[in-house]
Image 1 (cartoon, rainbow, N blue to C red):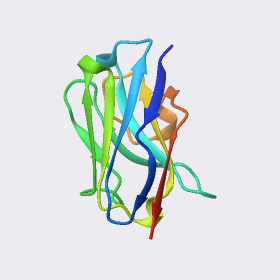
Image 2: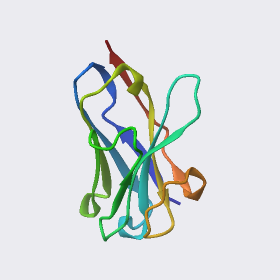
Image 3: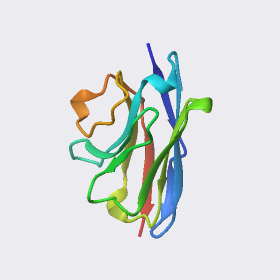
Length: 124
């Protein structure tokens, strides 16, 4: 059973940056592709970014491509999401997720484990 814990969220002004972290335990990090998702207030959860377990291939939602960067450090069992040029519409709970596959995937239902989320609030 993999446990995921997100951190790094907070309150930031528009135009600012944050680095979100997702620490994994209970499994071998290199066996899992990882993803980041978010759920804005009153909306459905949406895909942001995904990264494969070892090949380092990545994919992004169009809405964040160029502003967000996903990366991972398997030695630390940690996945990161660098979020830049934040906008008020980026306000959401940000979740990381792991899937029992080495292949990255953009579909929420393909993920097997989820963290509790970290709140990001962007003020205008």
